[in-house]
Amino acid sequence: MKHLSRSIAASLAKAPVAIPEEKLFELPEKVIQFGTGVLLRGLPDFLIDKANRQGIFNGRIVVVKSTDGGDIEAFNRQDGLYTVCVRGVEDGQTVDENVVCSAISRVLSAKSQWEEILKCAANPELQVVLSNTTEVGIQLVPDDIRQSPPQSFPGKLLAFLYARFQAFNGDKSKGLVIVPTELIPDNGSKLEAILLELAHRNGLESEFMDWLEAANTCCNSLVDRIVPGRPDEATYRGITEQLGYEDDLLTMSEAFLLWAIQGDERVKSILSFHEVDKGIVIQPDINLFRELKLRLLNGTHTLSCGLAYLSGFETVRSAMENDTVGTFISNLMLADLLPGIPYPVDEKVAQRFGLQVMDRFRNPFMEHRWLAITMQYTAKMQMRNIPTLMHYYKRFNAVPECMALGFAAYLLFMKGTEQRDATWYGQANGGEYVIQDDKAAYFADIWANHEAEELVNTVLSNQSLWGHDLTQLPDFAKQVSDYLQKMLENGAYPTVAAYFNKTTLVK
Image 1 (cartoon, rainbow, N blue to C red):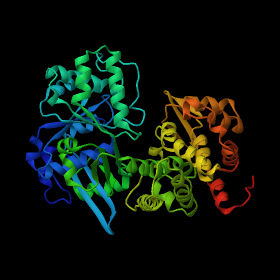
Image 2: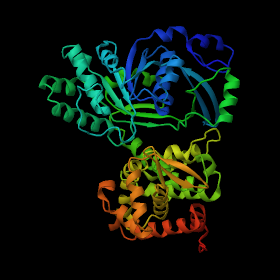
Image 3: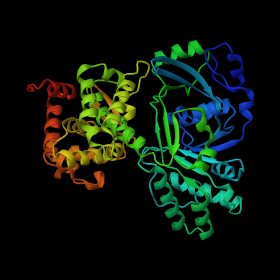
Image 4: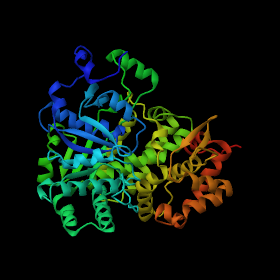
């Protein structure tokens, strides 16, 4: 079976998939995107493709990948094409849609094609910057923008903007709308502050600093769509047989989507693709969207992933189908996280959003893997859940039991037992798993030198991790220690089962 490519797309007229018209391949590059991940492919890129098909945005995306490896060969082999398989239930109707997206024109490697990337800065048609470099991507690190390439994402972006400033002699009409989609609060504002600080540290001229602030707009944004990416092998084989081609970039996605962007009428005009889907919202204040999504959907994912995986569940749906773990996830979201949201939210609105999220977790078409959710577990815990925990204590001065249980499972998941090629692995359910976290070595050392109670107190008191000494929260450390000890003695699933059954664990 042939791989998807531009040459075979025209032969797919009878396949159950929406294919791009030839004219879409001739559209100019209007977007530069940092990152090739499934979320970008399944939400922003998918929506830009949808707009192009309707003759609205009429622009393609040149993508920057930090390395030569990974999926760059697949993009090159498939002429930038990939299939999004949308599955779910919307307004009571089953959604089963396949779309070949042609929004991506090419993928360039920052490692080996940096000069080619900088040439894109001189493109007068360019209007937009998109990014998703995970939560750890938007950080200020010492960086020389004259390196080829700079080390960090902000360094690369600053070098690109400086090249554009030089190419157009500071023409303020050539500034860009920058929309980071990394899931951190005020992502656009933080990125802008880092860019300005890096420009200062790199000794760039004041005229550029003025252009950077006046001509460019960094928008805070929020993306919300569950995009598991490639399905399991059996599902993948079934889809490829149906479609009639192989696709190494095939991406599964739920039907629901939200892309909230903080912006004014100028931003709306440039991001004209917002017209094609009610899920794209551009308005001056998006904090409500951010808090609901960050605290309820993402916060629940983060506090559930370790517990669910250690309990033997590979996917979100399989955990939701289990009465015990499904009850834990529901109680965690609605009883602990919802009242702890550190933002004024109408409780009925939050309840409605939470119940909608639970339905999305139960989506019978999605296989969202818990291990994928554990990536950068510690950073996610700090950003998504610690503010909620602090606000919960401010309101109730009591232990949120499900949060304590989820935190204990996080600590157990982070127990690295073996290191190979700079990667730490943990043990669960008779096998091993990868710990994809910048703090993996720290936790391996802590586990090697501390018993459970001492470990909990050491980690919770580490203000460099959490921004707070969590041992100061009444009884929280004790409760986390108790749950961790029970998991060590009995396992994760018996511990959560005992919590809901209110029985005494037997060693």
